[in-house]
Length: 210
Ligand code: SAH
Image 1 (tube, rainbow, N blue to C red):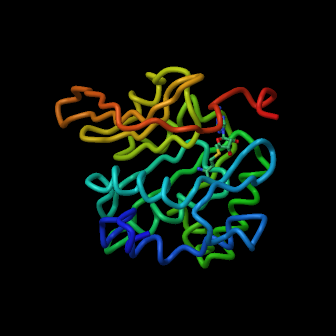
Image 2: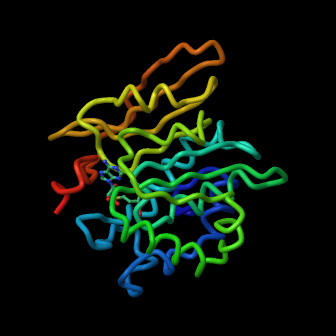
């Protein structure tokens, strides 16, 4: 991906290189293919280039010691990438939330297989089951919020949980979706920028997912 210009940042390249995608998929054969893959329960692990885009977009706020919330954390892959990006010299925190408890348990297993058991045990990575549309206020505010499922409209609850400054990367839309970059500046002013069109699993009610 770096050679073909899909990754432009050395920091993102280094973080992605530390995460073995084979630990976060069901079908090992497709682990290193740049495509999404079904992971059960109506969910998919995103394609590596989407994870790279998200990490590069959020990079200015992913400083050592940062707090990150990953809504719709699924396989846990992106939580691992974020962990590596914020752990250089200071203990940051990555909170992953997904509403499918089985996926949350599986993501913890995946993180352990990928060598991140200690970070899970000491709370640098926290994986929780719950409705991510409510965010996870008790561990916020967050320098970065990544949303891995498409919301019909921008949830104000999540904007409230952004730190000042902070940035959110979120797919928005029901039929046609696009990525919104939501920035909160140091005074709390919020600005939005449309980035590009995407197709994500919806951010929805648990019983509507299958
Ligand atoms: N980014 C993850 C998963 C993407 S699929 C990865 O790459 O592995 C989207 C995920 O969002 C699914 O795991 C799904 O269960 C979750 N999801 C959908 N609606 C949700 C909600 N309301 N609250 C929490 N998680 C939700």
